[in-house]
Image: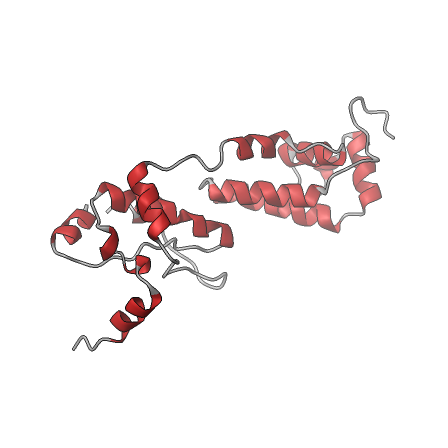
Length: 197
């Protein structure tokens, strides 16, 4: 037990897991990369620190002196050690998964998979918002082009970024049947095997 009011460090959550959960939610919300990295670094530090040392530092208010922890991440760790879901995580979860508009949702449901993503050994040059900004989409619709809606994911949680592509496509009037990753597998494979010469 601790002398610190409001904290019982005998019954705790997993603070490293809570920090990683925060990083995942920040990533899903499209937050700045430096903030996501800060929570991931803090999670690594916490995972590598002896639990008794963590509890002692929480009781003394010195968690922020650990490498990779700051005021915000230290507060999250203290709340986890007290057996509470960190307030920061609760707020993120409360605002996650806002409903999509009807046209976007229709197209999102029709997608069968993501046809383009990056692994952790590759990288992109621009944010997803900049890539989706592009009036050329309406011209492509008028020209009869086919489309693929991709997340350009660098992490698994970014696979959910498909919804941004769906929103843009819906606003530009892209017909569902002209999005190749809504097609059944046999149709998609037949299209990819065609001789385009």
